[in-house]
Length: 108
Image 1 (tube, rainbow, N blue to C red):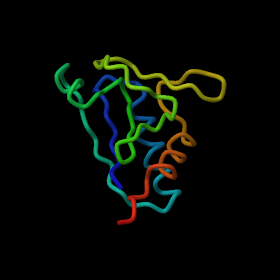
Image 2: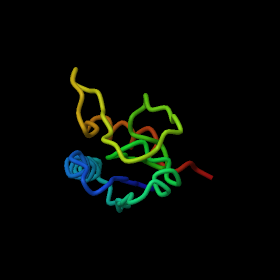
Image 3: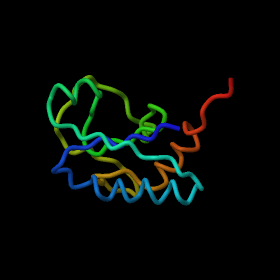
Image 4: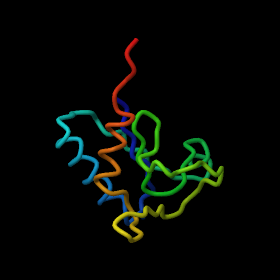
C-alpha cells in the first residue's frame, strides 16, 4: 500500500495529520511507511496535484471522499469538514475509511 503525506513547511495542520495517520496505521495493524512529500515550489505543487497542506493519499486516492480535483494547485492551508466544524487536518475516521476503501492492493 502506498501512503503519501504531502505538505509545505509552514503548514499548521501537518503535525496533527502526520500523528493521526501514524496512529490509524498502527491501530489498523499496518506497518506501511509514510512517504513524506515536502512541496517547496509552485511547479512541485502542480506536478503533485497538491490542493493544499496537508494532503493524505492512500494508493493515490485522497482521504477526503468529497474531494474533487480543481486544477488549482499551490501553497494553501487545506481545510477538512468533520464534527460540524472546519479543521486544518483530516479526521482519524476519514483516514481509517480511506485505508479500508483504498488501502488494499487489487488481487491479480
